[in-house]
Length: 117
Length: 131
Image (cartoon, rainbow over all chains, first blue to last red; front, side):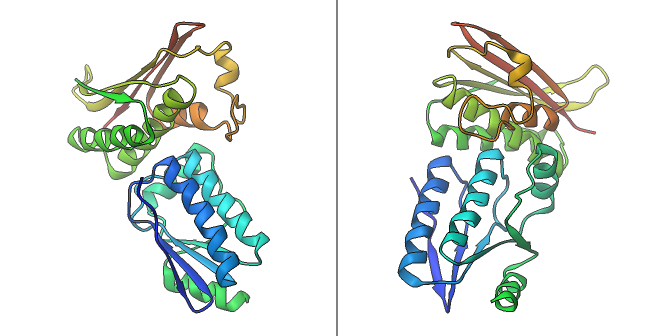
């Protein structure tokens, strides 16, 4: 199983998903992120899904959970770079990703985090 | 027709990738490709998690009016679904999920046929047509 790398830049953790996600990979990412948040005291998480071709109900639920888990560690999560086709499909699927903030790209996501902290 | 096994998370990814290739071949728009691949992901996961594994048969099909599309037939030998109407209800789940898998997949495709027999297994056939 592949793993998604987590980079710490300043007080933000950056996660850029560049692989075709399977369920176990997303669960692993959730655990890795929780550990990193404790270790680094980061206050923000940016998840870049520019390269992600589909988000189904399981992946969507996991992304929402990552947002909730981060909040328990006093960190804000921003999901960035969602493709238009993914956004349309997610909405039709009935998933709203409630509780997860979104931004058009990583730069805007970072601005959102810095403005809110 | 291409036959792919669904026995692991890796297999689910392979089914998605294969559906993507055939959906592009049949001339589906990027949004429609994304919809049918997402539906395939939901149904392949269902076959794996609830059906204990199964098979996906994927092919390009042509309609009577000459439109191309992609057709996927998911079958498993699992316990079957006792109440189909209930299983297709938004928010209803027998597992720990959101209950959007089956009902959501149905919304994302043009044709959706679910058959299930207790003790025999479940089959879901979906088609997405190009416009």
